[in-house]
Figure 1 (cartoon, protein in one colour):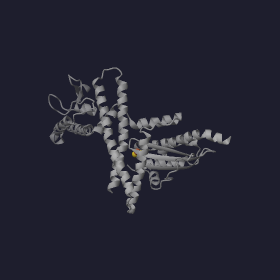
Figure 2: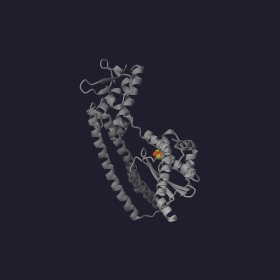
Figure 3: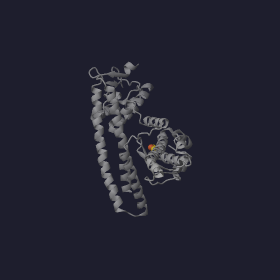
Figure 4: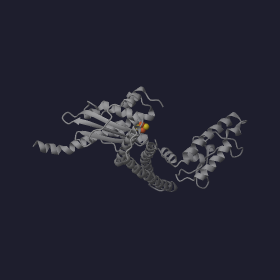
Length: 138
Length: 239
Ligand code: FES
């Protein structure tokens, strides 16, 4: 199977590889896996709590080239978006952008799952800290 | 005619594909049957692999292209098709994991489809998709991968860190144990499945079967991760 140029580009120059502090209240972490192949992907976002804009995103993927490219692209796409906008990203858009063949669709699904999981984690933290923030304001 | 394509045993009802005519012995056109039927086995997971092997060698000999050098072109091409199906069927059924995966597919359990649908549902409802493997296993997989990456870098630099090696060695042992335990878990489900095939007429069987199939899928999913990790650990330690 041959990879598209875009996949190869992301694979060779992955954007935003790295990690952020999982415990930071503004950071959301999504750790997901594709059982078909056993690959794992971690995607983290840092959200500005005032604007709900994702200001930074990092990923680390242990998996195939398409999974690395999908998650690299996902971090590029979520940056600058609000949380709600980021939730609209669909795996099919990733498939299209990277010209992934049918056997690699699950790699893009993994990236969408990772975005959702990261946002879900962030939201959970927001809810957990809200009462404290309200108390602090009083 | 489908009536000629398979025959069923008078006693147990098991179907099998007909490869040769029973009166003149000529190769029959292959019919799309599942691999169990191809060999005349019931759709069970505990399979007598020595019987399978015997059957495979007997059929291979009879279907071998050399036997059909002088045969009519139709018979020649059917024998080729039958042989290639024979090989696929044998390779799939002989391997316990491939056999299980094959059965799941036959029973309509499509792993990738399920995952895609779950993602679509999460998108539509805003609820979080449930990961098919437990989070702590994912965590473990991720952590170990990080360690392995570190190890590879150190090796490249010609350094070595006994603490890291020890950590990885320990992880390896625990993974191997897990791997074995998962296989045993799978076998338990095989037995449950086979039992449900035997009591095919009992009420509530369908729900039961579904549950068993899902359980097998779950075991295979976890096993995939563990298998990859064991492979990667071994690779990293060797190089
Ligand atoms: S092959 Fe599994 S994520 Fe790409």
